[in-house]
Length: 119
Image (cartoon, rainbow, N blue to C red; front, side, top):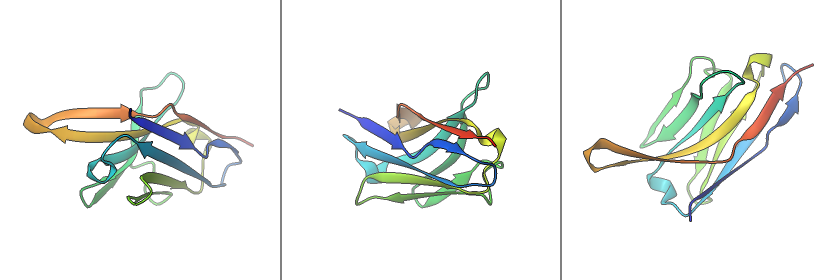
């Protein structure tokens, strides 16, 4: 059974920091591209950052402020978020992606964790 369990969300003031964690089980973690996505009310889910196969990608809005990292020994991926802005307010989702033969993508999702940036 695949499980992705996020933690670390909460309420933070503008300019503050949060560290999200996602603990994975039931998957071959080291082979997955792990990512963080977010979805704000009324908006589509968007990629924040992803890491896998030696590469790391960030959304333009995350560059310079957020850092994604992973611990393959602990099957955990992290998102360090600094200099948070009100527009970062969203539900943040952990994603594990596997690319199968014929470029078929298989995605697994966590339940999401709320991040609210407000004074």
